[in-house]
Amino acid sequence: MAAVGNNPSRDPPYHGTAHLYVVTLAAMELAAAERLTTAETDTALLAALFHDYDYAEDPDDTVNIAQAVDAVRFHLGFLDTAPIIAAIEGTCFPYVPGEPDRIQAVLRDADVLYSTLLFPDAQQFRSGLLIERGAPATEQDAIAFILGHGAQTSSGASAVTRHIAGVAGRSELPDLPFY
Image (cartoon, rainbow, N blue to C red):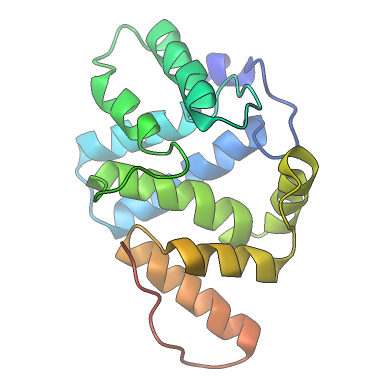
């Protein structure tokens, strides 16, 4: 936790340390909902804590991922870092074609669905994306982005569907497909 607290990129309005903590909390929730094993959950949580560590603010996300991977190797080198690194690499956007593994799916949904839509103060993070990337910052923009890219877990898809139903004032909407 000291390493995360000393994150060199702790202050960006979206990709800062607060985002790392939100994604970690969301990963805990999704890992339980998706019934990840204890080892998978531990990997997902460590990956969440480091997935945007030392964020370089580079439009080429592979640069940002490389920074996070270097941090994992440095701070967590006493562990088998291969699964943590694989999970982090699975968040590189745009996503690599193919089905993510269970940990990558949880991490992707924790990263995108919660920070931009499902977290109680998601507007703060959407505004951060506007500042950092010029990305549209409304709730409707986040919903459109998520609908365009889909959810990675059935739990994430259900949570987004419930959220959209609540926004629309409807008790039921068709399920969001997940990939």
